Length: 84
Image (cartoon, rainbow, N blue to C red; front, top):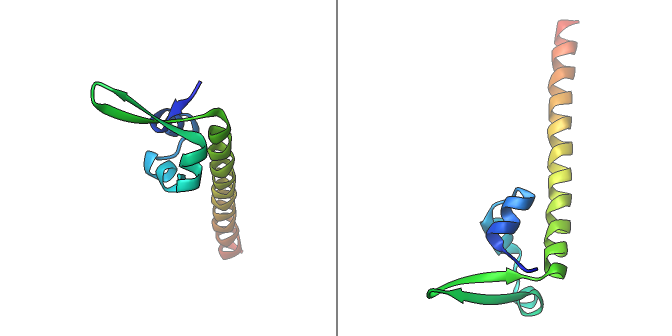
């Protein structure tokens, strides 16, 4: 079942704006449909598009977690070396 940008953003923990920036015209043409309810439009992303978005942002999250761990490790190393 297609998901909206809001649903995807909540599921993978990134902002709606981040997902919108990822949606190129080619991506939209291949994976996005528009649904209108009560004159309000919503973009629906199909399963293959959802998988691409999740893959894109999972690598960012992994990289960010690694950077955070390295940052904590570096701070701890500095603290230890200052104590010696």
